[in-house]
Length: 265
Image (cartoon, rainbow, N blue to C red; front, side, top):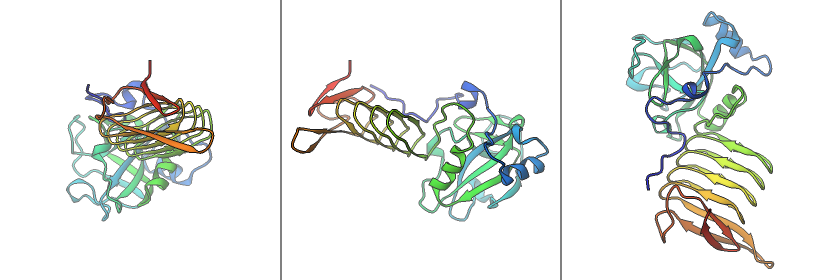
């Protein structure tokens, strides 16, 4: 069985194509976004946000140097939908997480751009100019900044860390950390860590770690451990299985009741 990792869209399929490009959600006045709108000669409501990464020297592909704030333009802009020739990023943090840098010293940038200047590529977008509104070597800080300004809807942001209470629904992109209470629904991309309580539903891509309470439904890609935490009246116990071993298939949902793992029907 082939399992398509979540958060890594197939060719020509991006969040903008599925549900519209959206607009920035300015909940409270944000000086950086106001400055971005002035620099890009538009209204704040005309802005979208892109997430991107740079190397520890804050350089992108080909050694292009990104500022830690302010306006930046592509010196070789070409509006054709081909890779290169522009400033690249993940629209609203959604795209192919394998294109990001996961170096512990990488820079995580959130940049504002005009929605009418976006050019869609595969797993990312490009623009001729942008305005850096947040730059940090702290992935959590950057993704939290972006998540606080997302338009309405569910946006699986690459690298996000989400925490919520019982009965919550959390969705994130590759290499994310999701934690929630009982009866929650967690969905993430490859290389993610998902933890939830009793009767929850967890779904993730390859190489992820899923842990939930008894009677939860867990689904993951290749090379992922699935763990249920349950009590026998005397102590907490853990039951763990691995996709690709002992008949446990990638992409197939499983549940567990008092230590017995069975396919979810």
